[in-house]
Length: 260
Image (cartoon, rainbow, N blue to C red):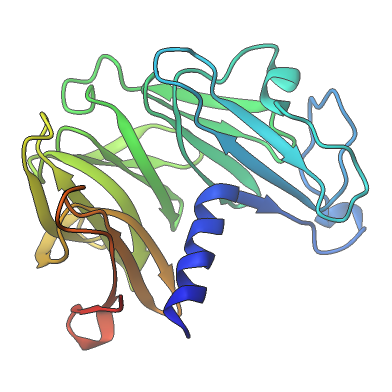
């Protein structure tokens, strides 16, 4: 796989966020559109709009890749008669439902396949998680979320109850990815942005304990799993150290290789 193609694919993944499609037109395979105010096709893409800090203008757009419906610029607002909040940070699709981490408002929301909110959990009153939710991934019925302030939370995907937490993992935790029962978490920089880290935390999901710390490029941020490997983009220091693309290979004792 060429580095340029991989990088483009990662950028597309970050921009689009989540897509949903039913297996057939059979009712048993239909997506859950309960409470929807609009009729949607079976194949659909949702695009998370981060918005501007402090402006409470994050949004969720709907797009029909098969061209069988019009673009809806903010389907969350239409379906829920409310704004999504301050800074839509990350989004995943898991078990035909949509999960969105809203960093500024510091909550996690679960939507059905039509963008109707089913449940949310706020972390504002939790001292360990009060610095703000960042990135999310899912495995075996749980959502795993990174937080600024150095915490990772294990959240029941059905109830959104926080069932466990790991703290003291770093400063500003960013991207996460799951591969081979391990959660990889980027530790980007200090809380005041005065210094940048070069480590990725590896958490064993079977015990929910820190297994090891990997040395990577300066200021690690974006993580994605593909073909049983983890790919990482580090952002450097914005001065004399630039962006770098790296590969972490779990089958080779988490060997880190710089690709470009």
